Image 1: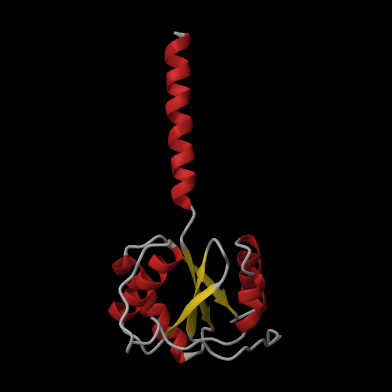
Image 2: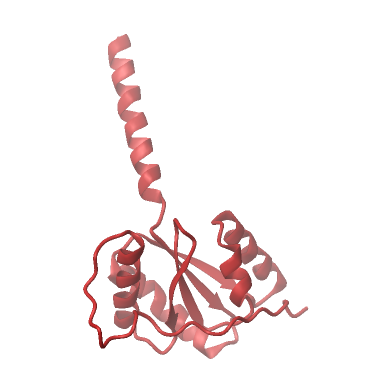
Amino acid sequence: MKLATVAATSVLLSVMIAASAMASPDVYVLNFRHAEDVKSQRLDQELPTALQIAQVNAEEVIIDTTTSAKWEKAAHDAFNRDIVPVFNKWVGLPGFAAVVDANSKTIIGCLDATQSASELASDIRSMASAASGQPRMTNASTAIAGSPCPATYNQPPVQ
C-alpha cells in the first residue's frame, strides 16, 4: 500500500512540475488598447485569432487605459509578470502590441493594427521562436518581423 501511495505521489508531482514548466510562456504579447480607439478595436478582433493560428507558447496581456480601474489592473498584470518597464514605456498609447521575451523581459518587436490575423500570426511565430532560442530563417532584404515600435509614450489616465 505504501509503495502504491509513493508511486502515485511521484507521478502527481511529475505532472505538476511539467504543467508548471509549460505554463510559463515564451513571449508576452502586450496589447495596448483603449475602447474608443479604432486601431485598438481592429487589433482586438485580429489578435486572438492570430495567437491561435501562430500556435506558440504566448500569453496576451491587455494593457487597457479606457478607465482608471482598467489602467490599475493592467499595471498589476505588468507587475505580476515583471514587465513594468515595457508597461511604462507605452502606457496610454493604444492600437498596437509589443512582443516581449518572457525570460529576458526584452522587447522583441511590435505588431500593428493594420496587419491581418495571418500576418500577425506569422510575426508572433517568428518572434516566439527567437525568444525560445530556436533558429529562424531570415532574408537579408527583409526587415525584422513585425512593425516598428512607436516612440516612447506615457500618459496618465484621464479621470
